[in-house]
Amino acid sequence: GGGGPTHMLEQIYSTATPKATKLIAKKQYLSAPELLTFPTGEGETAHGFLYKPTHPIYSPCRGEKPPLLVKSHGGPTTSTGTVWRMDIQYWTSRGFAVLDVDYRGSSGYGRDYRLKLTDKAGWGVLDVDDVCKGAQHLAKKGIVDPNRVCIDGQSAGGTTCLAALIQSNVFKAACSRYCIGDLTTLRTMNSSHKFEHRYLDRLVGQWPEQQNVYVERSPVSRVAQMKSAVLFLQGATDPIATPAQAQAMHDAVKANGYPTSLITFNDEGHGFKKHANIEHGHNAELYFYGRVFGFNPVFSDTTDPDNGGEYGAEEKRVRASVEAMPIQNEHGK
Image 1 (tube, rainbow, N blue to C red):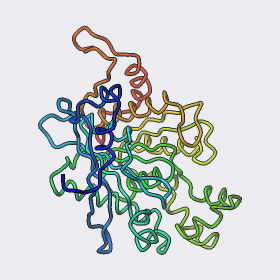
Image 2 (cartoon, rainbow, N blue to C red; image 1 turned 90 degrees about the vertical axis):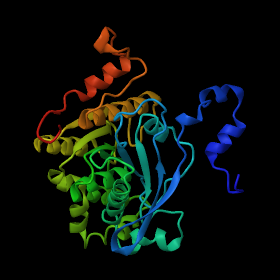
Image 3 (cartoon, helix red, strand yellow; image 1 turned 30 degrees about the vertical axis):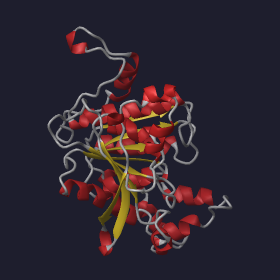
Image 4 (tube, helix red, strand yellow; image 1 turned 135 degrees about the vertical axis):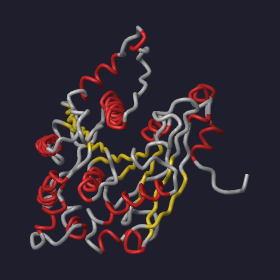
């Protein structure tokens, strides 16, 4: 009712084939996005989409406010959207609230909003402020648990993700997927890329005159300042976000005494393509947050190991990937 536009989730229900209907028969398992506009720095506002947890039975923190996963899109001047995304439903069906942020500079909110990153050379500043302010807004409203707030991002979104750990203490844990850790390397690579040749000059600063700004905003340069648990997911053949950058950042977080793990996929580059690797990455991220926040994730192929059952193949693989990280230390309790 109401005569408003039909969201894709509603279209799925109304047009699904009988076979598909079996997969989405229970609407209570699916989360629809809610547009969220919230106050941010410099007296401005930012936008995002809030997905509330929807599983009728399972929650990692029973009787408490849900943990929050903040997502930072790549680009960085693209946008997120409300298309059907299983990577978001994965989290909401496991008891997480998800805030998918369209930080200042994102497309889709008019020219003035889109130009905020480029007009102010604000990548690594405005986007970071917005993901932090969005999480704080939901915590202040009492919608999420302020002590169980995490963030993830991939590529340029991973840069925002890690910068947020350096510049704030909002997030207790993070997952970086093939993050661009060194902006100077990216700028050098872009010099031979016709389409993006001067892209970073507007996002960060004039090159090479402001090379110091590139260094300052590169997560790999300031990773020693991170005071949060971090999971790194990396492709072994990635020429942009190199394995060496991921290894250096992982080693720095570990040296600081914070929970961390690095999982390298030998058959992936910049952007994971293989279904098995994508699935394993999500499961590892969930397990990582469970270890940090103190809940036990449920995997579909595991049968109650505490009472005579056993871990399934995927949970065994996830545990083998993540178990090496320190957990019961002063930071990771």
